[in-house]
Length: 439
Image 1: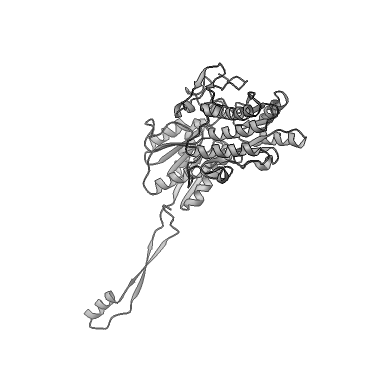
Image 2: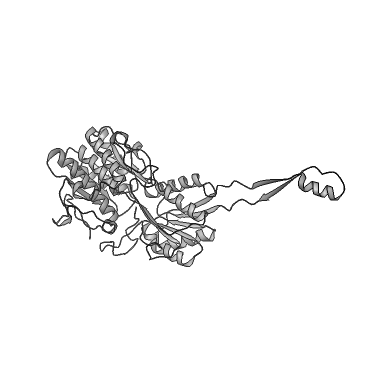
């Protein structure tokens, strides 16, 4: 997620607010190479000496093990947040388990102003690769890459890389994108809402969060309008923080009590919103929510509908392999549904992998409480997205209607799909959102 803190970065992407984000070398120990010097060699010596051939000799040659790859991670939050940082650390461990010959470490809870110092401390410890995991870490990462051309750097969620031509060749950028999954969550929300009102507990008003809100609301409106003929109403409550369970609880409760929302989505690094929904369920009020970054079902077993989950591991493993094999190439990776899966082609609905772990981004399990016709549509769209046969930000994703902003301006018309830059810089709400976007 493009991370983190209200005071983390100033850029043209902040809408005027000072805010920002957030088996190549599997060699064990020493390799013992045993060479048997057979009678041919020994026999020559014996022949020259006028004696019979000597018995074969066994010589053991010790070859040093390949040097472990050393990787250092810089985290914006605590590894136990159950959200953004927890997911990155889980991805680190996933990659380490599969690469074997790697030593990785991390520094957590690093303020963005302290990022460069954290990077330098990792380099002083001899790391080969530094991975920084907050949008506000972008410029310090580029600075370190310039200063240390013999090291490698990966920045998560930014736009600077050697591939893009705005950073040294030893720096890459990567991101795992959720807008498609948020649209599918929206379909589930629109299928389940009884009030016609959905709520969103939002962290910081940056393009990433805005496109996720828009995708969720478009999906919710699609399903709700298909059911009732009415448009959905969506309300957004901003935290201006990435991790604050107390404020999240207040915001989620207000969306239910004051706005009438009975489905809650969120961008905040704790399971609090889902827990609030579960508490309402226990009191007999049907309120629904989702997983975010990790599988959070245990925090709301009744209220949980589905959710967006990430596995950063395959991305990290790719970089491990490139460095270990001397095949580094600067890249800008933006993964979506279907990337890093063994079989990325769409499957029939009855064989859909929606709701099972795969690739870098995938759906949490679908709650059977979602009506079958909508579960089937979610699976169908999930499979179509693997081949980009369906995209949320199209008229097809909006019941054949152009996508308009809150002022009625057409932003996406028939035959159009937003490109990377439009998605990356989205600074407007779709017309079904009642709340205003902070400027």
